[in-house]
Structures are given as C-alpha cells and as structure tokens.
Length: 149
Image (cartoon, rainbow, N blue to C red; front, side, top):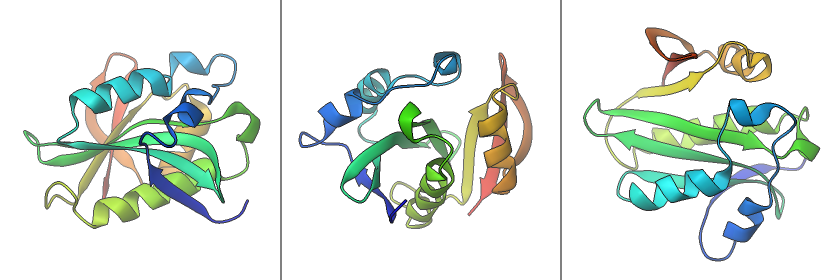
C-alpha cells in the first residue's frame, strides 16, 4: 500500500468507481457506488463522493454527507474493492475522511455519524478500533456509531 488519498468523484473517474466490486455477501451491508453516486447527485449541495486511491489506482469508495437538520457529518457507503480488502485501505480511508471533515466543508459540526450492522464484523471492528462509539440509536439492523473530530 502506497499513500492512500481521497479524490472527488467526477467525470474523469466515475467509471473506475462503477468497476469496484463488493466481496461475496457484502451487498447486504453496503450499497454499490452506482447507487451511492445517484444519491450524491441528488444531495450535491451537502455531500462529497470520493474514490479511495492507492497511488493512481482507485481501490474503494466512500461518501461524506452533511445533515443540516442534525448538524452532523455522516460517512456513507464505505467499500473497498474485493481484490484489495484486508490490506488497511478501509482504515486509511476513514482516517482520510475524518481529516476532510475536520476542514468543515459544509458546516461547523464536530460530530460524525455512521451506521453499521454489528454482524459486519470487519467494518464494526474497524470503526470501534478508530474510536467510534454507540450513539444509542439504531435503524433496522444497523447501529449508529458516532465520533468527535
């Protein structure tokens, strides 16, 4: 793994994003970037979709969205291509996203939320290891986790 960076999804790289693949069974936990980019288009005034890059190669995807009603940042749809999983890209992507949020691109909030199904053990362990804690809220099978930047 070289230096992991986040690059905004635009006309130059969205097809690379579409080519990312989830591992077997992961589609029950995270949406494919095609769906996520449709959401990003709708919520363009409050979100930024990113490709996760190792050097010049896209290895994953995530989206940062701001909830103006709750005044919180949210991490949505983090996924690493199945061929690149288990190499630390997810951890590096979350750290880079938190660094981006610290710049306050949409609002002054220090609160970051995400939802994760506790049965998604790899993702759950990652978020807990990075310091995310339960917020006390849940949505269907997913538990909301929070972090302060």
